[in-house]
Amino acid sequence: MARRTKIYEGKAKILYEGPEPGTIVQYFKDDATAFNAQKKDVIEGKGVLNNRLSEYFMTGLAQIGVPTHFIRRLNMREQLVRACEIVPLEVIVRNFAAGTMSKRLGIEEGTQLPRPIVEYCLKNDELGDPLVTEEHIAAFGWASQQDMDDILSLALRVNDYLSGLMYGVGIKLIDFKIEIGRVYENDYPRLIIADEISPDSCRLWDIATGQKLDKDVFRRDLGSLTDAYSEVARRLGVIPKSQVTKPTLIN
Ligand code: TYD
Image 1 (cartoon, rainbow, N blue to C red):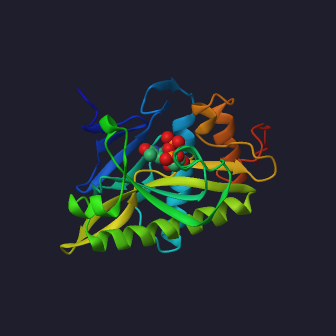
Image 2 (cartoon, protein in one colour; image 1 turned 60 degrees about the vertical axis):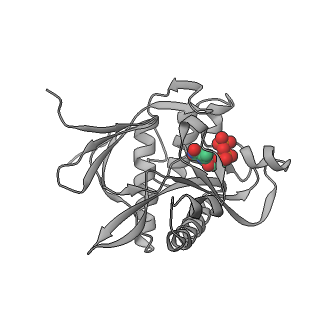
């Protein structure tokens, strides 16, 4: 008998029905995919790191008043989150050119942008998450004008929070992607940060060396992905600075 009901299985996570109505259990897998799942691998330990890192970012955001779906971490690989309707957009914030923006506009990777630029992609794997404009979003009714105002403000607040946090540990936040959820409180809709925030959905470069500490390590075969994610987690104090565990005397 199944332990619980699976709601959805994605590329990096599985969603199960939560213990109470309106809750979901998010399970972080070790699977890594890139280029719309054309490149795949299992990276041992990635799910554990992303569960901890996403908890850390979501908790910090809540502390500065940015609403998120995160309720609490349950174990090494699972967290309890609020059920919400997902707005069908990938919201991307860019501080420096990289990836598709560099390709599309011919701007060298790492070039600082005049100001943070927010882009929207339609969440549709079959179409490869195409870039869309606010005109498309309004015309096709994927989000309302009020939603778009709220999404922009949430995205920029997350950007300020994450950029500052990363800068403090010697890391440049090049870009990141967030997903937005809609919840109803007394019949009023409210937008919150959903899904995950982790090095799977950010570009993070070491300020001193330019070393990549994000999923580009996997996309571009630059070394060990778990070493890169562990480095981010260690700098933020999410995992201990030293991996070497010495025996401790317990009185
Ligand atoms: P982008 O440069 O548009 O695409 P790619 O990662 O394919 O080069 O991505 C900008 C940032 O958003 C980058 O940190 C990866 C993240 N992102 C996702 O995590 N998932 C997505 O579906 C998309 C489109 C971007």
